[in-house]
Length: 342
Image (cartoon, rainbow, N blue to C red; front, side):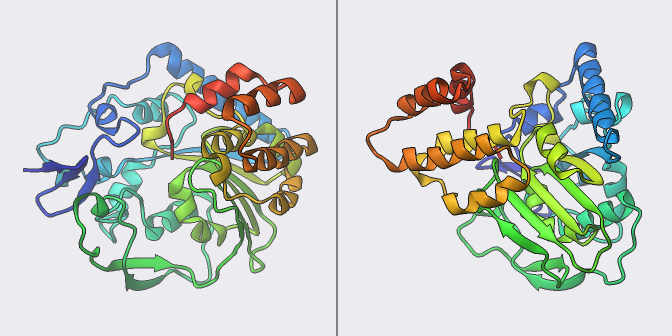
């Protein structure tokens, strides 16, 4: 019989699962967050429009929903009912969305796909998914090694060191820039000199962030933006070959609830809730000229300076953005009201 401790679901064999978390995981698994017909149709139209937009400059588009760990390892929670009436299942049936639940359930017969003490997939699962998605077979495979794995759930229930476990990695590190912004607003750029030209843009969450070096083995260049949205302006600037939205199942709600319509909005959100604690430096914004309009970069540079001056309050900064830069003040206030998201 499973047990619950500090918002962690513990199976009989000591596998850990997020219970409710910050994204209503338990409610989703119980079928309490299902979509109605209009919401499903809205998602269908949204994804078809994204496909058409990407096709206009010759890019393929994939919308991938990563299954919750509970769904992949359902057999470990025999007395914990999981409903099929979930947004991910609905979108897989009625829209172009891909939900590789059966793929991971089969794959785990070879090796585990998720970490025992963490919410996330491992690099073996990530590598196998992208190899199939992009129909590539890399000349060198993942290396196996034992180390302390990701363990975001372990630290909730124990003060002891997390046990070591089998992990995977590619020895070639392709990451050339990371803006050090954790979760929303994160940016990672990768360059792979061993791959022929294939440029990818990925909008995603911490699943992609933790495995970005593995993913980068399948591209010559990867731009990863940690956001829930789909940024057309960025795509126009980069003109990638492949565009991917890849999000964990617990981030999939109604299409109208997509929080950030652009990466710029995601950065504004992070700046406004972080204030002077933002890790982004003015000099780094030079890189952003690759994909962001000059006006947006100037606003971010100005925000860094404003937050360094203690005489300006958050309310004054929002007022300034609305007056000088014509940003929607109501939208800025809405961004600040969001609870912290991954």
